[in-house]
Image 1 (spheres, rainbow, N blue to C red):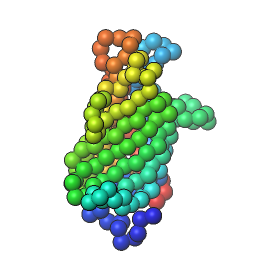
Image 2 (spheres, rainbow, N blue to C red):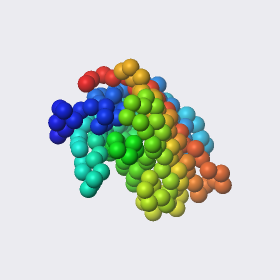
Image 3 (cartoon, rainbow, N blue to C red):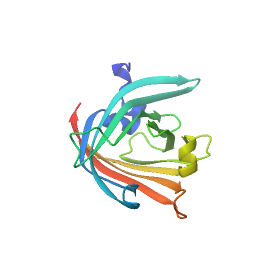
Length: 193
């Protein structure tokens, strides 16, 4: 549990603005659709919840973070189970001015993405690469052989009671020679603190 005196921009950086529950109805996912055998867009609704924790001390490093849960439903399937979920952490290291996102998706992929970030930033970027020992990507054997994520990038912009993202998961797929840019973007509005 985070003590109230720790809930400052100096500790959490831009993550402090993300605390709460958010929803976005205008998501667009560009990906390969196995049923059609081609790429295309899917519109989606998304709900994300962020809760504070920290500090977490790694020796002299002090991290402040958000525990997060995310679920997305295709716009025409809101009464069904989500087609995508994530769990993980967003972290800020105020001394090193590093921002990180650590998450897992139930397909069997784990990503730790990171980047430079000032505490008062309203936009920032994170990235990860397959094989990196710091900001990297792990995946199960099937995905490594058939749809390997080789690079991940994320751009965030925070406004008043809304935030937007654009992310790109670059895939090396066994069914094609060219890399596939699986992209997602959405703008989310605060629905609860």
